[in-house]
Amino acid sequence: MRGSRPKRRVAALGSAGALVTATLIAGAVVAPTANANAAGGHGQDRQARGTAIAAARAAKAGIDWQDCPADWNLAKPIQCGYVTVPLDYAKPYGKQIKLAVDRIGNTGTKAERQGALIYNPGGPGGSGLRFPARVTNKNAVWANAAKAYDFVGFDPRGVGKSTPISCVDPQEFVKAPKADPVPDSEADKLAQRKLAREYAEGCQERSGWMLPHMTTPNTARDLDVIRAALGEKKLNFLGVSYGTYLGAVYGTLFPGHVRRMVVDSVVNPSREKIWYQANLDQDVAFEGRWKDWQDWVAKNDATYHLGTTRAAVQAKWLELRATAKKNPIGGVVGPAELISFFQSAPYYDSAWAPTAAVFSKYVAGDTQALVDAAAPDLSDTAGNAASENGNAVYTAVECADAKWPTSWRKWDRDNTRLHKDHPFMTWANAWMNLPCATWPAKQQTPVDVKTGKGLPGVLIVQSERDAATPYEGAVELHKRFKGSRLITEKDAGSHGVTGLVNPCINPRVDSYLLTGELDAADVTCAPHATPKP
Image: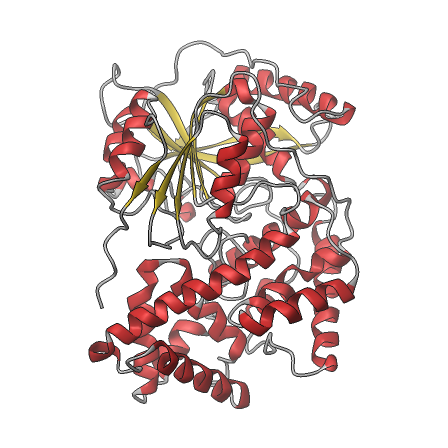
């Protein structure tokens, strides 16, 4: 399940889904050598050396900034460019791939500038290229940070404009209706297992040369090369959702290269959780947040007319699901499409009212609103390609990062047990991840995330009832990164806290980015404002 906002079909840690100009500091910056021993092992030593070689090369080359291509939809003064990195860091002089980057200069004076702030929105598979638009769109939450920092976005390897990978024809990928994720029989399970195996085979056929190298540690190494290409001695990083795991791995491999790091809505970095168990944990958290949304809908029955209790709203949901299973709504919206659409409510508070409004219209007799919201748009070929690519990267990274259970009995037992009490997301999430059970490329052992020499205090921000990245993940990273501080948004559950208006949180994020100062102790904040109907 995935971490940044999806677009129709269950997708990474975050969302189910296919369903989320200043001059550089003068002078080339020589890349400090990577901390070869941070993760241990001879292979890592070679990759650390390879990263240092690639970073030194990038520092010398810099980035040839230009106006962005028209079809990237990034208006001036945002500039775009590419950074070249090795496909395999153990072979730094071997095959190279290109990564797309963009930036907007800090809005303050030259004296106020503190370098580049690099962003990753999650996924795996999310594009960060929209990040500089927070400045052009005058996003008030980020105005103070923008005075001090160039905002830099990038597409990670395999994503979007950065040597994209693919596993299936995008138009086929979005076609609807798909089978109900909740199986009625062993035959249903067998059919889903066949689809998962075919998906893994499609990834190998279409993108096999990239698959062994589609790992979080390699993306962390890419991040270090981008840092060097920007002329930055140290990295300032903002990671949300899966971006927190990327930050955790970067901080472990390159502790001395970190200047400031904010991680928001945290993937549990424990080796035992990456990635099979993390997805099971998500199913439990999604059920809890789904209930929170239903409580809110019931409280606002005067607006939505979906019932005055959680049980009544759930009954309406089950009725809708059963109807769509029997006869897909508009011929295209079945249970799978419903889950892809409705899952945005447990993901993001900003989706509470729009999701409830569509549901309300449907119950009142307007089926078109639901079809428009939940069915694929086959004419949107660019959007469909982006959805397919996001899912391909999600799958490739999670499958390659760690060893997955290959026994169907284990998958079946674990998901059958979980589904009993957590039916909203469990089976949809299982099928999304099942390609990893038959993955055709090598699977790694996850990095042991920990504090290394030179790692500064990291700021961790997390809502207590997050569905996509359960709260325990933030606690675990806090334990592993010594000197870190944890801000908990109590009685809240939106995924991606730093982008929301919260007078307890926003000034603390600003203060850390601008001065490096952390609170003397962890902080608990009241929730941001509840959505209005």
